[in-house]
Image (cartoon, rainbow, N blue to C red):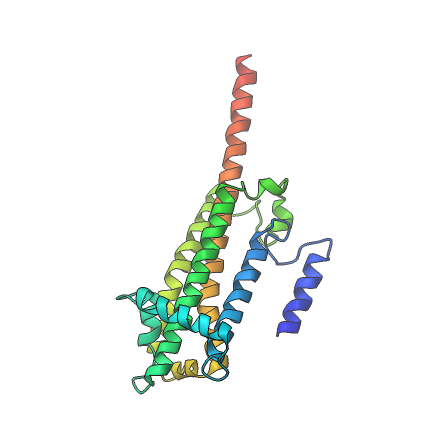
Length: 238
């Protein structure tokens, strides 16, 4: 899967024509997504390695997770829901490991979202990198259908943000409801812990960042429209 993903990414970025990857020419959005996913996987791998082969680095990650766990596992929080979805027979060390993993991933996701929001406002993304090409950066978005472009982008942006906010709460609930099909005890296995918790944190963060990007593009288009209308009014007055 990793090789397939790498091949698809290579083909997309070295092709003259876009296919399905959004914001390919609007850095650093996709770079931040990749960095966040990479950081989550590495961090959780070090955390899962600590009980087996402890080192100074794994001890640091483990200690950080143990500090963040009680802070973020407050009532009805996503971290607490992740812990509550575990089977009742789960051992205390496994529960603490799951809580630490969820806390670390959630913090990394929140930092990534906050960083992208700052880049939008302070770095004037995406126009800070030059002109924004809708066809290249939004290849699956057809501006000629479905009504007003600004309205559609705003709607899609809000939907993505809402979905990203709700998913960390919804995923543990769905796991619990489908306990006969999906076994939450898989999180006690190190490999599954790393990938499932990373996905639980990364996918919602990616959706929120996508929503913020859509709202930003809608804002830029609306600004250009207002400027064009102002120029037209000025010409008519003259």
